[in-house]
Image (tube, rainbow, N blue to C red; front, top):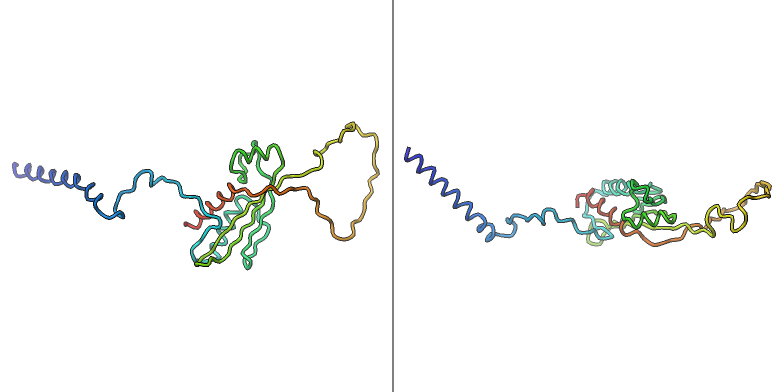
Length: 205
């Protein structure tokens, strides 16, 4: 019985000594064997660069994943694999009463779209990188509706019209001019970063 108790004490002493020397050994060892801290594990990923560099790989697989991530925010308008260009249709930016729309990232974007009609569209360009791989550039453009006067505005006259104009149908010959009803406001860099982060996660970069 004494031999068993002595053996247990010796084994316990060895375990305690090993636990006491373990941090010292880890600290004195190479950095690759250090235990990561809590902040390192849950540290957010750095913001991606625009354009985003993708290592060499299957172009078709990368293209399909990029299209799938962009399609979460905008409907597709055209895809040109030879030119490496993806264009989307314009969509109206979600307002404060539309929190489910994915095309507005910040509160200021939704407030702006609530006070003024704003639409966005995206253009993605994928080009070969000089050092190998591909460069994915995302541009999200914002446009604001530019009207000469508010919609349904009587322009100072009475709201009740006494004249009833005759409905005349005219056939237009030639090209139809595009109405200039939208004004370019710049790029939405917040939404660009969000799309690039989703592309980076989808490609496991």
